[in-house]
Every structure is written in C-alpha cells, then in structure tokens.
Length: 310
View 1 (cartoon, rainbow, N blue to C red):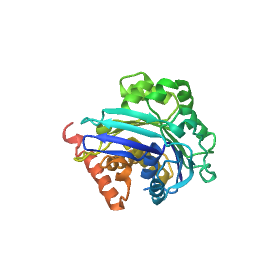
View 2 (view 1 turned 180 degrees about the horizontal axis):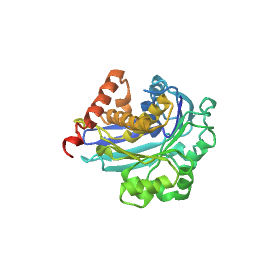
View 3 (view 1 turned 60 degrees about the vertical axis):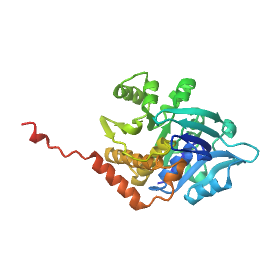
View 4 (view 1 turned 30 degrees about the vertical axis):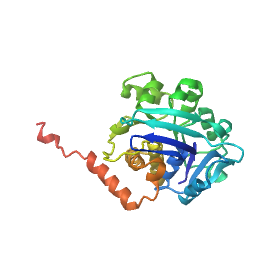
C-alpha cells in the first residue's frame, strides 16, 4: 500500500550542545518519508522548494527511492528555512528564525498515482493546505495528521474542521493539552477524539508515547539512548514509521496500531542519534530489527499477578 506524504522540505540551521549544522536538509515531509520507506513502498512526497535548494539534497531524497513527482521547484523562490537552538534539556527548543518563503504560496498538487487509496500523512502545515490535499484524494485507507500550537492558536476553526475529516491525530503532550483545554492527558484524549479523530497518539518525548484507540490506552516507552545529537524531526520520523507500518500491514486494528507506535518510536530513536535526517539514511534491516527487539525487551513485564494476589 502506498504512502502519500505532504509537508515541508526545508533548509534547517540547528544548534545543540553537541554541535551545529547550517542549511541542512530538513522539513516534516523529509523525515516522514524517509522513515516510512523502510516498511512501505511507494512513498510519494508533495512539497515545494526554491531555486536555492541544493541539487545534492534532491539526489539524497531520490536515493531513498522516494517518488518526487509532487515536489515543485520554484526557480525564482527561496526554500522554507528554519533555525533552532536546543539546550541541555533537549525538550527545550528556541526558534531563532522561520522564513516561509515559497511555502507562503504553496498549493499542493497530488500526483495521480497517489490519489486513490493508500495512507495519507498530513505533515505539520496550515490546516487549509492540509484540507486541500484531502480534496484531491479518494478513499484513503487512513489519514494521519500532525499540527502544532501555532495552528491551534491562530486557525482554530480551520483546524476543527480538518479534525472531523481525519482518522489519526499525532501531537505532543503540550499540544494535546492546549487543543483540549485540559491538563490531564487521559481527559484531553477524550475531548480531542470527540472532535473527530478516532485514533490519537500523544508523543511525550523521552517519556514515550500514548495510543488511544476505542477503549484501549497503550503506552510505549522511549528508547534510552546514551548519545543524542539532535531531536529535530523525531516526531515526524515517528509519524512516518507509524504510517509506513500500517500501510505494510494493510489493516487497522489494535495489534497493528500498537506495533505501529513501537515502530514509529524506533524510527524516532534513530533520528535523534545524528544531526538532521542522517540517522535515517542507510539503516539495515538488521539494525532496525535489533532496535525493535530492544523495545520489546524494554517493555516486557515478567510479572504473574497470581503470585501476588491470591
């Protein structure tokens, strides 16, 4: 089953306590697509870049066997650029600049091959642009969406309208609380799902992720890493891994969703080990399998209630 990814392809300038990069390949669509392609093909990308976007970065994306028919290059424009600085608490991020550039005029056009069925990933964008994508696709198997506090605060009506049209919302804990107006995450999840999405994933960074589906609440741990270089894109890689796994299985049920959360968490853990999307390049099947096995071991509870409760 194919995966359609709509989002940003960007030039990121990132500084962490462990190093820095300038105008590196980034953007939500980049991370989502790079993670999804490890378990599902084809993966199509819809985005826009400017004439300043390095040809080498396009080659990097092509080398990942991504379908770039939906990537528009505006020769006279400049690529969306973002700059951020992290401190030793890597959950604390300071945005240094955001230059929308060609993104201000972005009108997504979904290639014909990706308009029917498949899994649709709406990366973090204006809800109006995300809605334009849904107007172009028919009978998707699953629609996933990401958003952020900016859209929650500045485009609440458009976001609410969009939430009624999606299946899965993936947000972090702060965004979930703000969207629901509720500090308790379990209560916030109920409020958000009443807005439309039947499946909700709340990312909690180094504390893992929560899945809410029907009456099920599933908690997956984060992988404990000794070497974390750059958390940029980890949430997008999570979405890509989640979407790719569901597309590979071709069904949506409790077991598939639980495993999708773990696979997404594994992709996120690879991402943070290097700057930019470098951690998602050249992963072997063996490396992914080892990481998934580590998650299984990490979450295993060798506990028999009968030994305690008579």
